[in-house]
Image (spheres, rainbow, N blue to C red):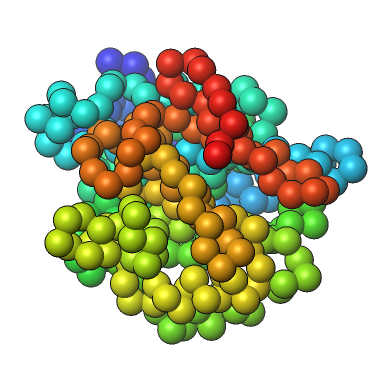
Length: 317
């Protein structure tokens, strides 16, 4: 097994060793003082925390004339069960796509959540180990997915995600554009989040919103037979979409559903890009492929290119 990269602030605790063994990783350092799971993960993941990655991004100049590029990668976890991995997934897809995005000249890479199959310390420690091993240099930012919570479904805690990355609701500005990340991982966007979003968005400032789960009113993606809206968030869904239109948001990028698609509602373009490596289950979305997006930010707006795992590329339509 490949040795784990050393923790940046000294060797992590003995808990890290046992957690990585449980999660399929390895570490060749000597154990030090015992710590809790949250503290161990928080210390080990410190270079990858959102505030550290945003500081790295802010220190790098963007392209001339207000133009720049960013990358978007969807769901990464390879599947909780061996049968779905065997039937619908391919080993190592996410890490291949991440490496290509890292070489693309993008200002930052945004990953839309579901990094791990379940949000345990073992799962996140193993994933962070993969980030160290990947050598990724481009600032790496994330949304919180339902699999990144302690249990993939239902209202469960997100302590391990917060230990690794920080708050799941945040925003930043780049090249005159506003980027806002909102947590939809429990299948809802609350009234408090909507109020926060309203304050973060200004119709006069071009904006992009990232979230893991699509709003349920995007029925072409979220209806599963008689289960209307089952693939999206219902609570706050209509209000979220009205707010996106009122604030003239240029794009909303989402994962959760493992496919690729574009829908326009109320002057807003919603882009589903959930093919970052998770199983490509049959479902309502017709285009199912492992891929990442490169997004060009130009004075006249945004244009996306789809980069498939097989090496092919094509404009997103």
